[in-house]
Length: 142
Image 1 (cartoon, rainbow, N blue to C red):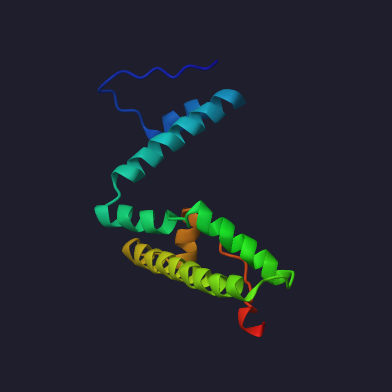
Image 2: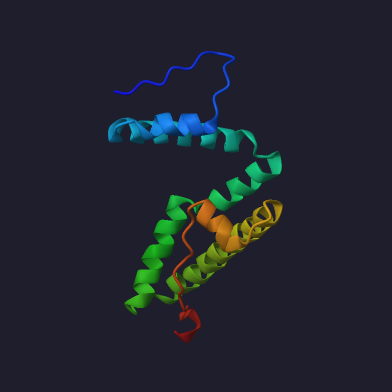
């Protein structure tokens, strides 16, 4: 294992650090990369403003499991044309709830993108958020 020795108050040029890193064997290089990634993430988190933290909370908010489960059940019933009228009305209410949550999430994404001077798709890549699959609702064609 290659060792890099650093003493306090000694300045080392980045080029020399990279030369030392280049000499690491693959497992040590992977460990080094992981540790550097953790340091970078900690710095980024420390630099989040309260507003960014609030927006990230909205962006990462998910539906309650019970709501998502019921929505999925009712959607399956509708898709299989086995949904009762009262279940259909419940599904319509849940669709409104899902759409409101999606709209809030999108608004937070837009606001955070503006704060960071990024396009929304760039922010989504940065946050590793996949765009939703396009879907066409046929609820009104019952």
